[in-house]
Image (cartoon, rainbow, N blue to C red; front, side):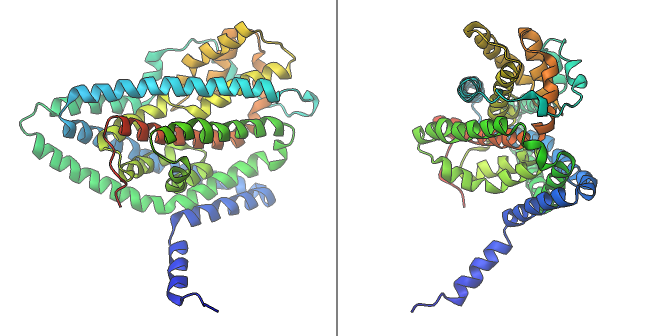
Length: 406
């Protein structure tokens, strides 16, 4: 009988116990258990998860700035930069519209809102409904979105740098700065298990697993739809361009677990940018597509918003005509672009959509608040997967992709 080599066994154990993903997963499981069995204690851990996300957010602006400036100045072809930007926005609009449409279709088929309302817990939704009357403003959206502001400044500086006689010297120093920023981020990411533990323990401790039961059908519907979207829609797009969605998900498993634990796709933004470069996407494509996608390519959020609107209509026994369904789709195509960068913005967008169509009662949002936190993980995970896929697709189509860099 062949025995396993002691070297192979030790190597496997070393690989497992030095893998950050392993510790993040253990932290999430521990957080769920603490939150369920010791909810009072678990609710005191909110600051741990919040602090980790806040620290990561400090890296977002410098990483976006450095990546984009270096990327644009390295291309030397401003027409190509413009083409990448336009192609990205067209791709985002097509895919998010598909996500909205799929959310509506699945909700109409499964009908998650056909349940008894009497057992549902109501929470105060006034802070969201009070803001529903204001119309969508691109100016306000830009002012509240630091990512887009940094993106705009970096693009301008990157373009100016192309005409500078000191271009190479500046690129050298910016490259060194980027190296140290990513080195600092590497060490901060060792805190990811703590952030995941704090975020998960607080969520379970505050809301409790029992709150999932009454709206379990809606949650199952949302998770199923996002699963289908990732593996069939995004999977088909990946296959067309010669990629495997399964291999891609394996490559970003660490980022997905961080998002799962913290319920924030921003917590993994710097890390996913670095990971996409290592996969072989050029710095310029990563710098343009990922930050823009965080504001305009919200696939998971789009699915949730469209399903939530149909869910509330079904909950109140409101029959929506084909014209009203089309109106919901068209309104969400615009308002969903504002569902980024601000806490609770998803609810504000949904409230604004309901106010615009004037058919579904705004107070229905109170039914969703109890389980929204448990669906935010699915939204954030789908969003980050969608942006990763978009980066690979744009890079491949622009011949800005090389085989994975080891």
